[in-house]
Image (cartoon, rainbow over all chains, first blue to last red; front, side, top):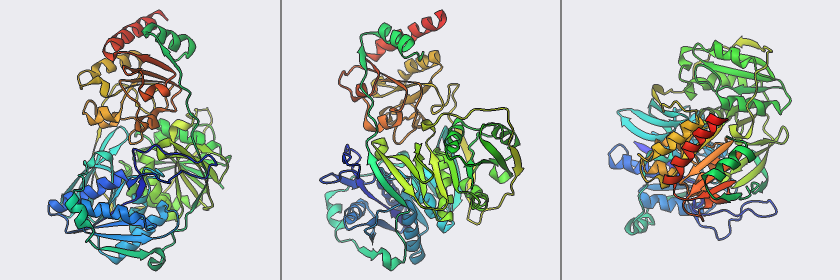
Length: 249
Length: 317
């Protein structure tokens, strides 16, 4: 079976972002960019399914300007077989991305699509659900365990207050949660090999999809900072403050 | 035009996140309709009809809705949604699972995790794990959004009764998953996102057994127990205890962080708490930068003392 994994290039999760003082956005100049961590888990899961013999080919897809080819090369180095770059200069938003991915599914027969549950920049957590809805495929979101049994897939989902297990027919759309797996590191030989793997570039216009954003960002500001409070000397002083000053106990 | 709120419930009552979403809904100043879906859920519909600001409650009662699988809910919601200008659900795993599906089929954007409503088109939502706040505007004809429950007070019951009407269930056109099972984390303590006091532990606890110290403090305070990602990854506690960007977002009256250094990841999940207490042996730990009250010292001596003295305080007051 063929698997598609969608990936996004985002500010590295270790970077403390700087917001421009004029409210126009996040300062991305000279900032380290990486593969979105949830997407890295998605790639890893696909590679593990291939190693177990369930998957014949892994296609990895990214949408954006040319810089997202970097993320595609990373995914290829982690074990994906081929890459597709959908080129657009628009800011990518979940609905447009879901529509673009749907077009690729119409072009090639994928049986399983794995995406990260959310990108750590815009934190939307929507694309997988939207894609499943547009394809009318079943969805397994926030997945921390995945098992393929014949023509079916069983997933354990991380939901508020516990875990939920669903079983669904393939084809299906899966979104990954943090505990699904621990991604491997790309080895140097694999990074070199990734440069030889096929990377196809398609313009969004050629796919005939409308990626124009529905949502307009007016400003981005820093949240009001909590002011650091005081240090107390001991338990007695802490309780005194919580009881008499803050009145919370 | 009016607003449709998709209720989340636990088969007995509406969940607190739904009540916070209802408060957010009242800021639009339009009639509010709540949809309650489930199996034998008329009691919940009755409850929903008694909240302030609710004009009508739709109830969709069907055995296929027993476990609220997104695919089974979508078709019914889709038909009803076209009559509304605003569609809201709580930004919980329930709301996040269903709402993007609905938005995609309506061909509109979905706005996630709204924390402030400026006008009928303009909303504020956190990005980059809460390190930025984006003001966004939508021109879509139907505004579909999830509401971050901690950003709004819970709605209150009033004596009034809104009308309750049945709405027909429509079976999904998609292939559907089958519900297999649900494992609830069993706890006598309050639910993490609903508790007024949360005590959280981190890597400082060193092992699973030591977390018992935190649990006795929690029981003394009637608090929920949380944890940092480091404590979860180390296997001290189950993963649904996790507070942070990739875990739960909480905003209790009192948050006590013990043995937690305060990584950005964790702060994203608790920095909107009303009062924050940090207990950590490292005086330079970043957690102190957001704490109202900080106590530097060894948690293994401080915690038993704190628990005992709180017990005394409770008895005397």
